[in-house]
Picture 1 (cartoon, one colour):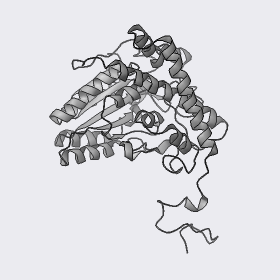
Picture 2 (picture 1 turned 135 degrees about the vertical axis):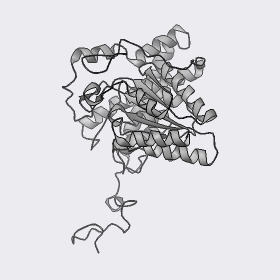
Picture 3 (picture 1 turned 30 degrees about the vertical axis):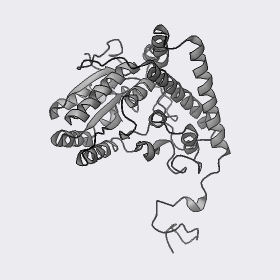
Picture 4 (picture 1 turned 90 degrees about the horizontal axis):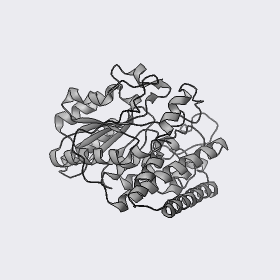
Length: 355
């Protein structure tokens, strides 16, 4: 396969998995996947609007265009399988079943947010659904997934831990350390790299000597595959097989999903590095549009069903925005809770923790 980057676009070639793909998921699951992809898309589009209005502070990293990679991977896991992610993680939380109201309220910094309004966009977490967070440190969530995999193996459970990270994290030393540990101890971990071809504004072929990132697994004797991350069913099949290897054989593996984000690195990024025709080529393969065609062609959905899904999702997202707008902010007196060992002190003598 040719190398990646703005001058050598790998979009035209569809990667093939190394393992025999399992049967196509049942129609009901595919409909659920389609709805979740639309929910993530509309949620993030509305989040972008609210950010521009000043209702969301801090950073806001959107994954618009990457919905197939997010939904296909999580749909292939069990609800109890732990997941860690990057700071681009709104979709992961929603795909795992987190309440859209609570997620939007967290973006707004409201006390009703999923983390009490303290984490914001980059640090969503829903431990009750085994989603163990987005992290602002690039690559920081990878060893946490290995630790979760170790816990599964230690307890002799049947779970699978999945570390989701971007191409920008693959050159962090912690990935090699984590993969080595997982392979050495045969931990049930899936290393899932969502390669959107850019670490911030740097093209992958300018950052990695070999832009085929899945080859990193060769050094650890770990099976790996490169797939089309714009095709939700391809992602689903690959993760299903990786999860089977982890559960049945205690074999960690790596998946590289080739995808693309339509927006810049974050809302503060003017996105002037990527050329227009590159964006247009990827947008022509929009995962929502292509999956809709598949479902219509298989009679898993009708045109009326598609319209109903979009209308229902629109209502859910608008309700989430209204809920976040109406929710109270985090009280100032509560801002230091879970941060400092001592109560918050507003005395003008210096630090909040000074007597």
